[in-house]
Length: 159
Image (cartoon, rainbow, N blue to C red):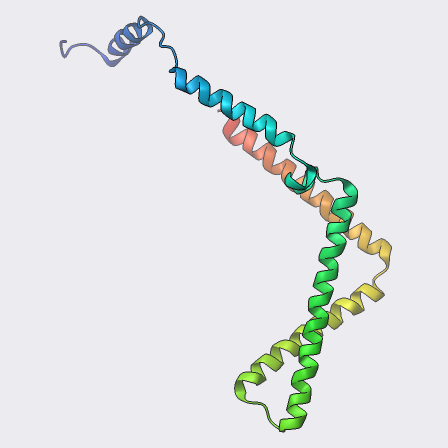
């Protein structure tokens, strides 16, 4: 090759040589692996609902799961309150808590205060407002998702 060739002619030469090569077949092991993956994907769709993702569960099962989760959260709150009551009883019996228990007591009191604020808000805010706030939040999320999709398509896909 001489040095006086320009890059475009070299590109055309390499392109012509590569296009002239015969097409290669995929190895037979690749075909077997691809078919095995396809069959595995089909079998995973036939799994029972409790082995699939949460969105594939029946609506009643999702509702029961969410209610049970809320119940467990409430149980944790009640457990925290009983632990706080035990610490207060210990404080009365001992007269003074050690500095480490003082931090624990402060944490428990903050937890109880947060729980009291949540209970107060749940009692005082009208139900319609709560549903409206949920609908507004979902709408804002959909708008954000749509704007992100539009921005992605404008910046990356059109190029």
